[in-house]
Amino acid sequence: MKMFNVSNTQVYKILKKKMEILKRWETCANGKIKRELKKTANGDVNEIVWEWFVSVRAKNHRLSGPMVHKYAKKVAEKLGKTEFKASNGQLESFRKMHRIVFNELCGESSDVNSETIEAWEAKLPSIIKGYEPEYIANSDETGLFFRALLNKSLCLKGEKCLGGKLCKERLTVFLCGFMSGEMEKTLVIGKAAKSRCFRNMDIQKLPVEWRSNKKAWMTSQIMEEWLTAFNGRMKMQNWHVLLFLDNATCHPHIELSNVRLAWFPPNTTSVSQPVDHGIIRNVKVHYRKLLM
Image (tube, rainbow, N blue to C red; front, side):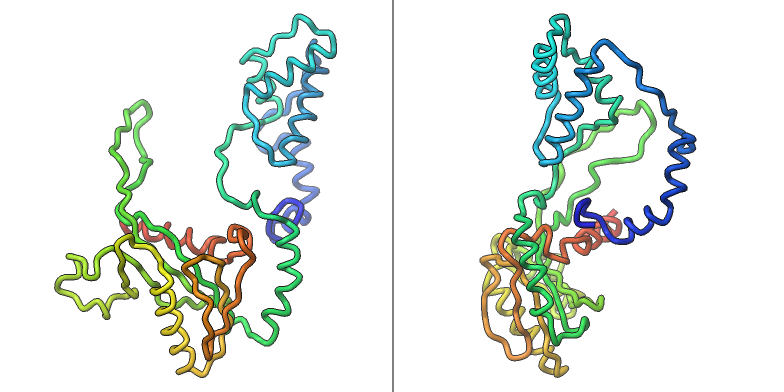
Protein backbone atom coordinates (compact mmCIF):
# COMPACT_ATOMS: atom_id res chain seq x y z
CA MET A 1 0.00 0.00 0.00
CA LYS A 2 2.77 2.45 0.93
CA MET A 3 4.85 1.55 -2.14
CA PHE A 4 2.07 2.31 -4.67
CA ASN A 5 0.02 4.78 -2.54
CA VAL A 6 -3.23 2.79 -2.90
CA SER A 7 -5.92 1.57 -0.51
CA ASN A 8 -5.88 -1.84 1.14
CA THR A 9 -9.07 -2.75 -0.78
CA GLN A 10 -7.24 -2.43 -4.11
CA VAL A 11 -4.38 -4.60 -2.89
CA TYR A 12 -6.68 -7.32 -1.55
CA LYS A 13 -8.77 -7.39 -4.75
CA ILE A 14 -5.69 -7.78 -6.93
CA LEU A 15 -4.23 -10.53 -4.75
CA LYS A 16 -7.58 -12.31 -4.64
CA LYS A 17 -7.90 -12.28 -8.45
CA LYS A 18 -4.20 -12.83 -9.15
CA MET A 19 -4.58 -16.01 -11.23
CA GLU A 20 -7.57 -14.63 -13.13
CA ILE A 21 -5.72 -11.43 -14.02
CA LEU A 22 -2.64 -13.34 -15.20
CA LYS A 23 -4.76 -15.72 -17.27
CA ARG A 24 -6.65 -12.85 -18.92
CA TRP A 25 -3.40 -11.14 -19.79
CA GLU A 26 -1.89 -14.29 -21.28
CA THR A 27 -4.99 -15.07 -23.36
CA CYS A 28 -5.62 -11.41 -24.33
CA ALA A 29 -9.16 -11.62 -22.90
CA ASN A 30 -9.21 -7.87 -22.26
CA GLY A 31 -9.88 -7.17 -25.94
CA LYS A 32 -6.41 -5.81 -26.66
CA ILE A 33 -4.08 -7.63 -29.04
CA LYS A 34 -0.75 -8.58 -27.50
CA ARG A 35 1.87 -8.33 -30.21
CA GLU A 36 5.35 -9.74 -29.97
CA LEU A 37 7.79 -6.87 -30.09
CA LYS A 38 9.61 -6.99 -33.38
CA LYS A 39 13.37 -6.89 -33.21
CA THR A 40 14.44 -3.75 -35.02
CA ALA A 41 17.76 -2.23 -35.87
CA ASN A 42 17.32 0.24 -32.99
CA GLY A 43 16.01 -2.28 -30.46
CA ASP A 44 19.07 -1.90 -28.22
CA VAL A 45 18.62 1.89 -28.19
CA ASN A 46 14.95 1.56 -27.28
CA GLU A 47 15.79 -0.87 -24.48
CA ILE A 48 18.32 1.51 -22.87
CA VAL A 49 15.99 4.51 -23.28
CA TRP A 50 13.15 2.53 -21.68
CA GLU A 51 15.29 1.63 -18.63
CA TRP A 52 16.25 5.31 -18.30
CA PHE A 53 12.64 6.41 -18.67
CA VAL A 54 11.45 4.05 -15.88
CA SER A 55 14.23 5.14 -13.51
CA VAL A 56 13.54 8.85 -14.07
CA ARG A 57 9.79 8.51 -13.53
CA ALA A 58 10.42 6.41 -10.40
CA LYS A 59 12.05 9.55 -8.94
CA ASN A 60 8.96 11.57 -10.02
CA HIS A 61 10.98 13.80 -12.36
CA ARG A 62 9.19 15.47 -15.28
CA LEU A 63 9.79 14.29 -18.82
CA SER A 64 8.91 15.63 -22.25
CA GLY A 65 9.25 14.39 -25.85
CA PRO A 66 12.35 16.52 -26.63
CA MET A 67 14.09 15.16 -23.51
CA VAL A 68 13.51 11.57 -24.67
CA HIS A 69 14.75 12.53 -28.16
CA LYS A 70 17.92 14.02 -26.73
CA TYR A 71 18.70 11.01 -24.55
CA ALA A 72 18.01 8.59 -27.43
CA LYS A 73 20.54 10.49 -29.60
CA LYS A 74 23.17 10.26 -26.86
CA VAL A 75 22.60 6.51 -26.52
CA ALA A 76 22.81 6.02 -30.29
CA GLU A 77 26.10 7.96 -30.46
CA LYS A 78 27.60 5.83 -27.67
CA LEU A 79 26.56 2.65 -29.54
CA GLY A 80 28.08 3.98 -32.77
CA LYS A 81 24.76 4.21 -34.63
CA THR A 82 25.52 7.22 -36.80
CA GLU A 83 22.43 6.78 -38.99
CA PHE A 84 20.01 6.89 -36.04
CA LYS A 85 17.48 9.72 -36.21
CA ALA A 86 15.35 10.58 -33.18
CA SER A 87 12.30 11.52 -35.24
CA ASN A 88 8.73 12.15 -34.11
CA GLY A 89 7.76 8.81 -35.66
CA GLN A 90 10.39 7.02 -33.60
CA LEU A 91 9.10 8.70 -30.42
CA GLU A 92 5.51 7.80 -31.29
CA SER A 93 6.33 4.13 -31.86
CA PHE A 94 8.35 4.07 -28.62
CA ARG A 95 5.40 5.64 -26.77
CA LYS A 96 2.87 3.14 -28.20
CA MET A 97 5.18 0.18 -27.55
CA HIS A 98 5.42 0.98 -23.85
CA ARG A 99 1.93 2.51 -23.45
CA ILE A 100 3.31 5.92 -22.44
CA VAL A 101 0.83 8.80 -22.18
CA PHE A 102 1.22 12.55 -21.73
CA ASN A 103 -0.67 13.49 -18.55
CA GLU A 104 -1.15 16.75 -16.73
CA LEU A 105 0.64 16.94 -13.37
CA CYS A 106 -1.65 17.85 -10.49
CA GLY A 107 -1.65 17.78 -6.70
CA GLU A 108 1.05 18.59 -4.16
CA SER A 109 1.66 15.17 -2.64
CA SER A 110 5.05 14.78 -4.36
CA ASP A 111 6.35 17.82 -2.41
CA VAL A 112 5.63 16.24 0.97
CA ASN A 113 8.58 14.94 2.96
CA SER A 114 8.01 11.21 3.54
CA GLU A 115 10.04 11.27 6.79
CA THR A 116 7.73 13.96 8.19
CA ILE A 117 4.66 11.85 7.36
CA GLU A 118 6.19 8.70 8.88
CA ALA A 119 7.00 10.59 12.09
CA TRP A 120 3.47 12.01 12.15
CA GLU A 121 1.86 8.57 11.66
CA ALA A 122 3.95 7.18 14.52
CA LYS A 123 2.88 10.05 16.77
CA LEU A 124 -0.83 9.95 15.81
CA PRO A 125 -1.96 7.06 18.10
CA SER A 126 -0.76 8.93 21.17
CA ILE A 127 -2.62 12.11 20.06
CA ILE A 128 -6.00 10.40 19.60
CA LYS A 129 -5.63 8.15 22.64
CA GLY A 130 -8.74 8.35 24.81
CA TYR A 131 -11.00 9.73 22.07
CA GLU A 132 -13.73 7.66 20.38
CA PRO A 133 -14.32 8.18 16.60
CA GLU A 134 -17.49 10.23 17.26
CA TYR A 135 -15.37 12.71 19.24
CA ILE A 136 -12.56 13.14 16.66
CA ALA A 137 -13.20 15.91 14.12
CA ASN A 138 -11.38 17.42 11.15
CA SER A 139 -12.06 20.64 9.25
CA ASP A 140 -10.69 22.64 6.35
CA GLU A 141 -11.78 25.38 3.95
CA THR A 142 -11.87 25.44 0.15
CA GLY A 143 -12.69 27.90 -2.62
CA LEU A 144 -15.90 27.40 -4.62
CA PHE A 145 -16.52 29.04 -8.02
CA PHE A 146 -20.23 29.04 -7.33
CA ARG A 147 -21.34 30.40 -10.73
CA ALA A 148 -18.96 28.45 -12.95
CA LEU A 149 -20.74 26.28 -15.53
CA LEU A 150 -19.35 23.13 -17.14
CA ASN A 151 -16.29 23.50 -19.36
CA LYS A 152 -17.21 20.26 -21.21
CA SER A 153 -20.40 19.14 -22.94
CA LEU A 154 -21.87 16.19 -24.77
CA CYS A 155 -22.08 16.99 -28.49
CA LEU A 156 -22.30 15.41 -31.94
CA LYS A 157 -19.10 14.18 -33.52
CA GLY A 158 -17.65 16.91 -35.71
CA GLU A 159 -19.77 19.63 -34.10
CA LYS A 160 -17.96 22.82 -33.08
CA CYS A 161 -17.98 23.35 -29.32
CA LEU A 162 -17.86 27.04 -28.46
CA GLY A 163 -18.02 28.52 -24.98
CA GLY A 164 -17.31 31.72 -23.11
CA LYS A 165 -15.10 32.50 -20.15
CA LEU A 166 -15.79 30.65 -16.92
CA CYS A 167 -17.11 32.81 -14.09
CA LYS A 168 -14.46 33.16 -11.37
CA GLU A 169 -16.69 34.59 -8.61
CA ARG A 170 -15.67 32.71 -5.49
CA LEU A 171 -17.00 31.78 -2.09
CA THR A 172 -15.03 30.13 0.70
CA VAL A 173 -16.63 26.98 2.11
CA PHE A 174 -15.51 25.65 5.50
CA LEU A 175 -16.32 21.97 6.16
CA CYS A 176 -16.10 20.11 9.45
CA GLY A 177 -16.85 16.43 9.99
CA PHE A 178 -16.37 13.75 12.61
CA MET A 179 -14.54 10.45 12.17
CA SER A 180 -17.88 8.67 12.67
CA GLY A 181 -19.28 10.38 9.53
CA GLU A 182 -21.39 13.16 11.07
CA MET A 183 -20.94 16.63 9.51
CA GLU A 184 -21.26 20.02 11.18
CA LYS A 185 -23.28 22.84 9.60
CA THR A 186 -21.25 24.25 6.69
CA LEU A 187 -19.72 27.72 7.05
CA VAL A 188 -19.85 29.84 3.86
CA ILE A 189 -17.95 33.12 3.48
CA GLY A 190 -19.01 35.67 0.85
CA LYS A 191 -18.24 39.31 0.08
CA ALA A 192 -21.56 40.88 1.14
CA ALA A 193 -22.90 40.92 4.69
CA LYS A 194 -26.40 40.53 3.23
CA SER A 195 -26.43 39.70 -0.47
CA ARG A 196 -29.32 40.81 -2.70
CA CYS A 197 -30.59 37.25 -2.96
CA PHE A 198 -31.07 37.28 0.85
CA ARG A 199 -33.16 40.47 0.74
CA ASN A 200 -36.39 38.87 1.97
CA MET A 201 -34.75 36.12 4.03
CA ASP A 202 -33.54 35.69 7.58
CA ILE A 203 -29.83 34.80 7.23
CA GLN A 204 -29.95 32.91 10.53
CA LYS A 205 -32.42 30.44 8.97
CA LEU A 206 -30.15 29.51 6.04
CA PRO A 207 -29.03 25.84 5.86
CA VAL A 208 -25.45 27.17 6.19
CA GLU A 209 -23.68 29.64 8.46
CA TRP A 210 -23.06 32.86 6.50
CA ARG A 211 -20.10 35.17 7.13
CA SER A 212 -18.56 37.90 4.99
CA ASN A 213 -15.50 40.02 4.30
CA LYS A 214 -14.24 42.03 1.31
CA LYS A 215 -12.29 39.13 -0.26
CA ALA A 216 -14.58 36.25 0.77
CA TRP A 217 -11.61 34.61 2.53
CA MET A 218 -11.28 32.83 5.83
CA THR A 219 -9.79 35.14 8.47
CA SER A 220 -8.50 34.48 11.98
CA GLN A 221 -11.44 36.49 13.40
CA ILE A 222 -14.08 34.40 11.57
CA MET A 223 -12.23 31.21 12.49
CA GLU A 224 -12.03 32.17 16.16
CA GLU A 225 -15.77 32.99 16.20
CA TRP A 226 -16.55 29.61 14.63
CA LEU A 227 -14.32 27.73 17.10
CA THR A 228 -15.94 29.51 20.05
CA ALA A 229 -19.44 28.63 18.77
CA PHE A 230 -18.35 25.03 18.05
CA ASN A 231 -16.94 24.73 21.56
CA GLY A 232 -20.24 26.04 22.95
CA ARG A 233 -22.21 23.36 21.08
CA MET A 234 -19.90 20.64 22.37
CA LYS A 235 -20.18 22.01 25.91
CA MET A 236 -23.99 21.86 25.76
CA GLN A 237 -23.78 18.16 24.79
CA ASN A 238 -21.06 17.54 27.40
CA TRP A 239 -18.68 16.33 24.66
CA HIS A 240 -14.89 16.64 24.78
CA VAL A 241 -13.71 16.75 21.16
CA LEU A 242 -10.35 16.51 19.41
CA LEU A 243 -10.30 18.79 16.32
CA PHE A 244 -7.56 18.47 13.69
CA LEU A 245 -6.60 21.62 11.74
CA ASP A 246 -3.79 22.50 9.35
CA ASN A 247 -1.21 25.17 10.10
CA ALA A 248 -2.83 28.01 8.13
CA THR A 249 -2.22 31.55 9.36
CA CYS A 250 -5.98 32.09 9.67
CA HIS A 251 -6.33 29.21 12.16
CA PRO A 252 -5.72 30.70 15.64
CA HIS A 253 -4.06 28.70 18.42
CA ILE A 254 -6.53 29.20 21.28
CA GLU A 255 -7.48 27.26 24.40
CA LEU A 256 -11.06 25.95 24.57
CA SER A 257 -12.89 24.16 27.37
CA ASN A 258 -14.40 21.26 25.41
CA VAL A 259 -12.39 21.27 22.17
CA ARG A 260 -8.73 20.31 22.01
CA LEU A 261 -6.97 21.54 18.86
CA ALA A 262 -4.44 19.27 17.13
CA TRP A 263 -2.26 20.45 14.24
CA PHE A 264 -1.08 18.66 11.13
CA PRO A 265 2.64 19.02 10.26
CA PRO A 266 3.36 22.04 8.01
CA ASN A 267 3.12 21.54 4.21
CA THR A 268 1.57 18.07 4.45
CA THR A 269 -2.11 18.91 3.85
CA SER A 270 -2.33 17.00 0.55
CA VAL A 271 -1.36 13.75 2.33
CA SER A 272 -2.42 14.14 5.97
CA GLN A 273 -5.67 16.15 5.72
CA PRO A 274 -8.68 13.72 5.64
CA VAL A 275 -11.12 16.38 4.32
CA ASP A 276 -8.88 16.73 1.24
CA HIS A 277 -9.18 13.00 0.50
CA GLY A 278 -12.55 13.07 -1.26
CA ILE A 279 -14.91 15.01 1.03
CA ILE A 280 -14.30 18.44 -0.52
CA ARG A 281 -14.41 16.93 -4.02
CA ASN A 282 -17.74 15.19 -3.34
CA VAL A 283 -19.28 18.40 -1.99
CA LYS A 284 -18.23 20.26 -5.16
CA VAL A 285 -19.47 17.48 -7.44
CA HIS A 286 -22.90 17.47 -5.77
CA TYR A 287 -23.04 21.29 -5.84
CA ARG A 288 -22.21 21.38 -9.57
CA LYS A 289 -24.84 18.73 -10.31
CA LEU A 290 -27.50 20.76 -8.47
CA LEU A 291 -26.36 23.96 -10.18
CA MET A 292 -26.70 22.42 -13.65
